[in-house]
Image 1: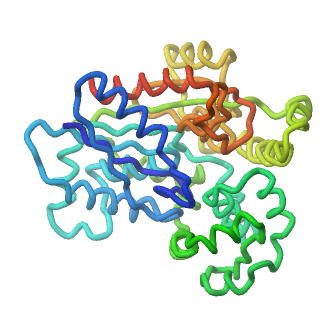
Image 2: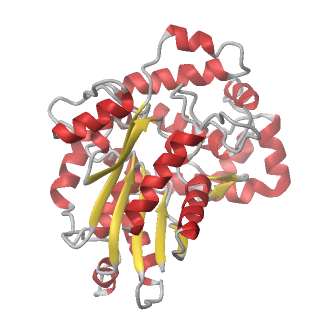
Length: 374
């Protein structure tokens, strides 16, 4: 029996307002394992949305420790974005984690077979520095709420225009740092009325309790992380690495006819350009000739330190075996892309123009399933 623990990235969640973070990955793996006649169980890791890497790693190991041992059991950690760093810390024999007072965590590590990281900032991302400011943190609260609330693009545009004092009483009731004022939009109001307030409140309060993870994915702390978190020689490490298109005026105008898509393109352009400025004193991975050739062939261009998926630099994603690479933004690779077939099963989270397709996503999931079953 294979067990895959799914670890979300920054602002990640299991499901919120009918929005499921890993739904497409979970479904794809279930289909492929079933076709191969191999039993599989996936588990959600209840990490904090912006929690520190160490505290979230302790949560993951506690979940692994709580899984009853069985003969033939194969346990994998699969982390997206910052969740990949959490997976590495959880698996590291040199990790010193909160609550590690006996041999429980060491025993849990000994049961792990592989760690897979999907678009993870192993060498940090310059974008993180933007969100360490008060205004940047407030913006992230709002973006997290709107994304998790699964508002339509039109509702997001309406909400963006009303992020001032709307629903101020609710913001105070949540007790968030900075007195975050939630966005007033019909979509949000309906979800509050429909009973989503408790889950949304818990999600945002989790952000307010611990924001250490935001700082820890900057290139400077990532350098220390890599020096401290040793890989286990008994565990296989594999990664996904992608890149999305450089924003341009032409791509911006291509979205002009679709409701709300221009706003999303502008946001993507901002995050892309913040991410493409590497910290020269803290270099990313230097891919070998084979990896360089694979990236170039898959992406149709040579990658450099400015290449990124809109959130994480491509060369920062490299750690261990390169399982899959291709054109994709930070969320396309999880199956959250603009569907190219009908009826639509996928919804785009980040309008990057990366042109992810069902076929390409299927190839990525084929590679992932093969790696886990190997």
